[in-house]
Structures are given as C-alpha cells and as structure tokens.
Image 1 (tube, rainbow over the protein chains, first blue to last red):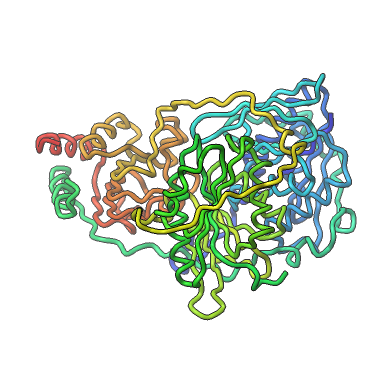
Image 2 (cartoon, rainbow over the protein chains, first blue to last red; image 1 turned 60 degrees about the vertical axis):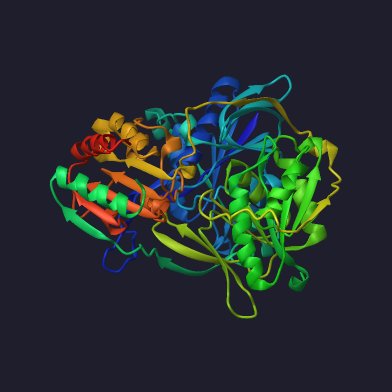
Length: 261
Length: 334
C-alpha cells in the first residue's frame, strides 16, 4: 500500500500579534509549525504503516525552508519526502496550489492520498477536495477514524458531520482529509530524529511535475487579492471600573434600556 | 470564456433530512441584495429526494427561480452526485455568482466545483458586494491570517464567481409568502459508475447535547477568567433566556464543548446580547462575535481588547459579578 500525505508549513497563527500603533502584522519571531490537521493526517498514514507496512511519502509545496516540516515527518516515521519548490509556483491561490500538487501526484504511485482538512493560516479547506477532483478520485473530508480492509483494498471511514457522523466505505485509490482533533500524532522518535537527517529530501521544480504551466503560480490563479486591510473594530462604548454590586445595577439598567429584560 | 454570457446569482440551497438549512435562507437574503444591485435574478438550486415542497420557502426568502433536482442518489449528501448535478447546471445555465454555505457539506462541495469548473472560490467571506460602477465587480472579503487582516478577493476572468459563507454571517429576509417565483424540475444525467464509488454504511445523529449557539438571541460567554465557575454561567444564561458559549480557552481546557466555542475556529454569532465574562478578546474571538447587537464585557484587566468592541465594559471580577447578576435577575422574576 502506498500513501502520500500532503503537508504544509504554517506560521503558528495563535502567536501572530498586531502592532497596536500601525495595525499591521508582526511576523518576526512567529514560529513555523507543521499544520495541525496535516500532522493528524500523517499520523493516520503512519498507523497504516504500523499495521500493514504501508509506504508513506510526504510532500509539501513551499519555500526552501519548508524542508523543516519534511524532516519532522521523516523523524515521525515517513519513508520519503518531497519538497516542491519553484519561483513559477509562487503567488498561487488555492486552485493553482492544488494544480501543482496534483501535477506532482500524477507522476507518483499511490493508493491513498491524505491531506489535512484545512491549514490554520488560511482556513480554506479547499486543497484536498480540489486535488481529488483533478485526479478524479473519490474524497471523504472531515475524517475522524479509518480502517483498511486489505482483502478488498477498501477503507471504512468515519466522517464528522454537524449533527453526528457517517460511516462510509470507499475503494482505493481515494483521498481523505483529516481532522487534527480526532487523533494524537506521535512524537518524533530519537532514532527517527537521528535518521531523518540521513534521508534525502527530494527537491522538485515545476519542470518535474505533470501540469500545464498556465495552471500553476500566479498565472494559474483565478482569484487575486484586490486589497488587504486591518480589521476595523466597532467603536467602543463606555468602560467603567466599579464594585460588583454597582456592576450588576449598570448591567440591569443597560438591559432594560435595550428591552432585553 | 465569454464573461457576458454568465448571468444571475445562484445559491446552493442546502438541505439535510429534507429540511432547508438556515444558511441557505441567509445566502438568499444576500443574493437578493446583490441581484437587485446588478439587475439580475436570484436562482436557488434545491437538490435532494422528495424535497420539492421546500421550493416555495426559497421563493419567500428571495429566490426568483428554484431549480429542483429530485433524485434518489441525492437523498443524503455525497460529494460526487452533488458535484455532478451542480456542474451540469453551471455548464447549461452559466451563473455569474454562486454562493454556498460554509458547512461541512458546503466545504466539501465548493472546492470540488471550483476544480471541476476551473474557477475561483473564496472561503468564508464575511462581506459580499458589487461595485457601484457599470462593471458591477464582485468583491468578496474574508478574514486572513487568523482574523488579523481582512482581504478583498476578486475572480476577474473565470465564472461562476464562487464564495462560501459561514452560517450566521448574512441575514435572511422576512419571509414574504406573496412573492412570486418559478419552480423548475431539472434533470441530471448522473455518471452511475462514478457516483457509486462511495457507499454510506450508516448515518448516526448524535445528540451531543449541542445547541446551535448561532441561533440564540442571548449568549452568556465565558473565557479563561471564569474557568473556576463555569457551572455558574448556565443559570445566568437561563435567567436571560439564552445559551452559554465560550472562548477557545475554555473549550481547549475541556471545560466546555467545542460546539459552543465562538470565534475564528469556532462559530460566528450575532445575538441581540453577548455577555462576555472573563474573556480577554483575542482577535480570533472578536471575529466571531463583534457583529452582536449589544456586547457587555466583564474583565479584570482594563486593557483587555474585548472592551474595544463592548457597548458596556465592566472592569471587575466576573466570578463575583456573574452569581450576583443571576440572583438579581431571579429576584426580578426572571
């Protein structure tokens, strides 16, 4: 069984701060991490490796420094790592990102592709389903658990829904998107860390993947950012320092004024 | 692509168990506003099995036309049959704009449609507008960088221009049962081999004790500052006829269910009253509640960002004020 896990290096957005004077982002010193949902997806793949000897490849598209998350994945137990990096891929929106990754996947063998549900820096949750469509694969998103049946080469998957869950059966090859909250990713092992740096991280450029050039990078992006601006907060009302008893009376009178009680 | 062939504002009318979801009605309200600005029509796409009875409700909510695709393969949501049906509609009808709710269903379907039809998809837009000039440029604004920035996105040369919108962000119209509209039965040629690649073995509705906090008129929300008195929030919510909600601090600590979390990684709410107790107000939290009609915030730290959006800010100890306020409301017969 061959599994490819798509991972992304993201800024730890919980650490992003705003400069209160200029209203701009302070990016300096914000640590980069493996996107949590992707790490959950990698854990599912490694569990299938433990159980069925699956071969696990991780791939990321990004700047050269994204190698760090590939090394982390190798240290967790992945077998092969690919860094897709090229100026021609820059400025891509989600569709062009998916096109590039699908282009890489077309040149590889796989039974199962796993992506995270969404990345914490964009929250779009688009890349997994877009790759699946480009490769004409069935997809299951919001995966909470999965079981592989080697006899039928099929997966039984539990999918999270708003009001419960579905149990779905899908034939491989297919694509799943994983939820970080449903699985506890393993730590890197000491041996894994030692060997992670002996393994090669393959670096692929745009010429190595199977996709028309007008589908990748900025040219291949149907969307563009017209403008970006700091969020305007609505004007503040009054703020009062007072005793708990006074606070209660203030709140009561405000509620009465607005006919809420 | 001849852009001028693409017309009208389409809405995916999501239904579950045959019942149209609120988010679809909210999108119809926004679609009506956009279509009135451009002189276009609002078209709802209603997919399901035995769902035609819901069509009139969509017209009352703002649709001029309802395309009903009634097929057994659409009974429960599955990616492929839904993607095939809407793709056929897109190819035959050529929509200018297509809006989809950012639910687990919409977030599964939307990107699949964008890839199949090679067009852009803006995720979780919080503002949708068309420019005042003749071009009627469609502008989709969404939070970026975890809610720290807003970005306005265009999809200039591809159609339809698609966006998902989270439940609770747009406002539905008062239903107008006198509105006239057209209901059209739409036939789809499904690819039987493709739609059978995934089988539903079981569907389970779980009562997670969940409430839809996005539907509540009053929310009493707790943050780190009340982690010691979480059990005191429910009685206060009850006295105010509302529900409890929380910031990420409480749901991460396992003190409250994730379904009650407000903010960037939780839900977007706009109740009549949002009473924030012991919440400092990280930007990710504010993103999910700042549209509330009235915000009252209680926090010990007078520099807490929550005060910047509060109509009334109380610098004080929420652990003391919450029980006192509950008692006071009860004494008033609430």
